[in-house]
Length: 225
Image (cartoon, rainbow, N blue to C red):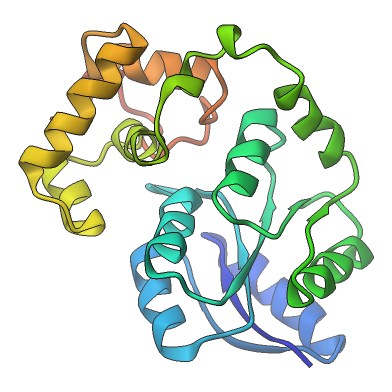
């Protein structure tokens, strides 16, 4: 029996997952649609496995992955998402996810991923391995994002999802001035001069989905500073 926590912005999805998991003998100890709330619950409940969607409305699942890394929590993460973007697969695994499974996969694939995570192993669901391979076989010269440090990659995701420097600083325990410095440095590395250009670059290189980013329905110029 494995203790699990669910993060997905669709209640119906969470209810379906709970039924499936409990039928297989697992225990769901909590659920949320918000990364900040989820991190607080994970610190308190200490489940063995987190099932995490990457697209959470106004937030990104990468925020929660970053929080797990920062606090060195023992909870293993299984990404369960609709996102079949090669760079998101690679980024999730780089940030410590134990497994990556697409929502269209069979329930047995998810159970295999959970079992692998519990035993400290890695698992890529059906069709996901080929997606990850696409990234690792590309030359770094074609990927300007490869120039960024892990912290810069974390911040770019939060910026393009519409978070201000003050909010990013609060979540990462950094001063707004430090966040602004990171932001200026990563923009210089990428050769962009404004947040709109940063958003376009992140979409073009598939760090985020154009339709699923936190700023859904907003113009790139509407993002805060």
